Structure formats: structure tokens, C-alpha cells
Length: 194
Image (cartoon, rainbow, N blue to C red; front, side, top):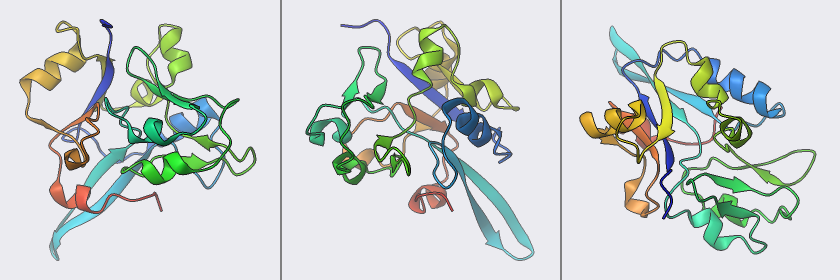
């Protein structure tokens, strides 16, 4: 049994919808124009003149029970021992089964390479002892990343101190992205960006 299980807590009370995380993700991972590995969903709440915006950052949930891994015929999608779900670009055949199986719609077909890609929690950065690019770039500290199994880490403290929610828990995938202050209206409108 691994002593590391990476996850993230996103404090929606702190998210200002600046989209810096989106830009950092695209730059770090060379995500082509027209597709996204992570994005911030924006919805308007209320009625004029009492209208406010609500923001919901979306990225791969790195689930404990990832349906995308189960359906992959080549085993290109797999879960590392530390909980990160990744895609081997050398094994992926671009069939798209994993895209259909993911209830969060966070995978995309690379328009040039014709293979499926998604957020990897910037595993190359984690393996080098760094944080994911979106976490490092977050201006308000709304994103906290780390080992969920280490009670001394900020991510575990937040998860265990505040009421947290996940998106679409009814699918039984057991996501490892936790939200503080999740808005049910924002969740009901989760879809691909733009």
C-alpha cells in the first residue's frame, strides 16, 4: 500500500476567476489552441440587479476508481501508485473510449497527434519535487496540492477540517479533487469549456 496519494483541494471562496491556472497549464503542457486540460467554468447567479459570478475550476479528478482506465483497450490510461492517472502517449491509439467513459469530460483528442490527453497533475513536475503549474500560478492560493495521506500537509488539513465536496460523486469514481464551497448550480452545468 502506497503512503502517497496525491490530490487537490480547491477553495472556491478564494477563486477569483482570473484564468491564470488555465494559461499556466497550457504553457507548461504545450496544450494546443482550441483544447484545454484545465479550465475555469463561470456562471452567473441571481437576477438583475442582484447578480454575481461563481467560478468552478475543472481538471482531471485523478479518481480512485477511474472508469477511463477500465475501458482503455491498450492500457495506455493507467493509475500510478501515487494516485495520479496518466496516459502513455506511446501506447494510446486514439480510440476515444476513455473520453466517453469519463463522467467529467476532461479528456480531449490532441488535434495533431490524434491521441487522447488530459491533466496529469504535471507529473513531470511532481517527479522533480515541484508543484503542478496551475497550483504554483494560482494568485490567491485557492489551489492546494499534496499528499492526502499525510496529515501534516496543507491539502490533508484542509480536506479534514472543512466540509468538502466532489463533482458527481454518484458515479462512484471517488475523485481526488475536493472543493470547499462547491455551488450545486455550477456543478449541474459542468461541460467542456467554451
